[in-house]
Every structure is written in structure tokens, then in C-alpha cells.
Image 1 (cartoon, rainbow, N blue to C red):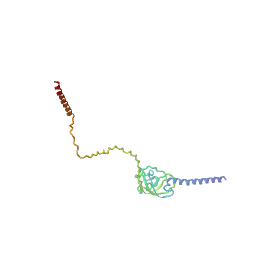
Image 2: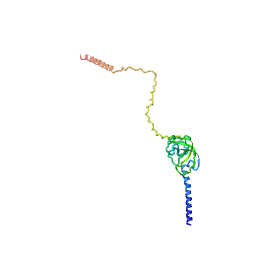
Image 3: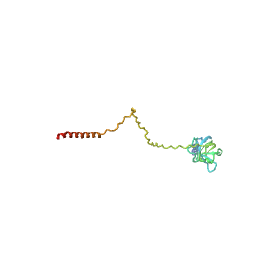
Image 4: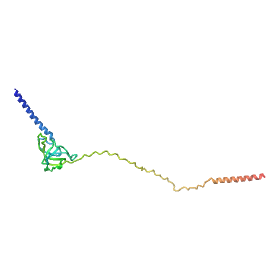
Length: 209
């Protein structure tokens, strides 16, 4: 009985371990690049990523931060790191990829090979068929609200009311000379007074004789 229980326990542990390995490996692969193509499948894809060197050997490249096709990117340069999600490019020189494109966003059309390895250093291979630079569309900075223009005082252009001439007969009235003066009248009064005085004097003179 004792040996039977021991063998049964070992068998159960072996089954559990095998099941855990089968479930962990695909799950790890799914987290790497399942959004583009399941790791157990291979097929033609269009993918955008940051071109980076693959290791220290020249002529080998990796596509870091892979993602689906995009219309544009805000900047032409990039600095993504090569992690387990990156793709190792196969035959990049045949499509025209060179070191001059390192650190730039590019779009690649090619065949993505299947990958089920759990080794993070074993990158999934992408056989490059063609590539192009991703268009760069820089965001437009929001302009500060413009201050309202300062209005300068405008001169008063209101015309003064025109004087309407009064209609006349067309003939100017004659202007009389200013000859009226009180001096002649005063002189006349003085002369009359003198004449009256002389007459009164003569009237009284014969009676006194």
C-alpha cells in the first residue's frame, strides 16, 4: 500500500508539472506579440517599429516596439529598447535597410515566422519584403489667445450744420449817414437865450429914463 501511494503521488506531480509547462509557454508567447499574429502561426504582416541594432555584430537589425500600421508619428527619431517583443529582421539589406535608418520609425511588410520559445533572447524573425519611412506629422502647438487690438481714438468727422442763407429781395437798404448830433441844438438854444436877453434889456431901458 505504501509503494502504491508513493507512485500515485509521483504520477500526479508529473502530470501537474507537464500541464503547467504547457500552459506557461504559450501564455508567455502570447504576451510577446499576439496582437499582430499568434506566435504559433506565421504569415504576412505590416508592422511599424523603431529600427535598432541587433547585438554587436554589424548588419543585424531588430524592430523594437512593434505595433500595427499607423498613419504618422509625431517625431522621426526613436530610442526604443530591444526587448522580448522586438522582431529580428531577416535579410534587411536586400530591401534597402541600412545603418542610416537606425533610430527611425519604419514600416515593414514581410513574413512573420512562428515562435513558441520561452527564451526572451530568442526573438521572433521577420523576413523583410519591403519597407518605407513612416510619415512625420508634428503636433501643432496651441496658439496663445491674441489680445484685443487697441483702438485709437478717431477724430470727429461729424460735419457742422451748414448755415442756410435767408432769402432777400436782392436789394440792400441804403445806409443813412450818422449826422444827428446834439451840438447844433445846444447852439440854437444858446442863441435864442441871448436874443431873449437882449430884447428884455431894451424893453426895460426906456422906462427907466
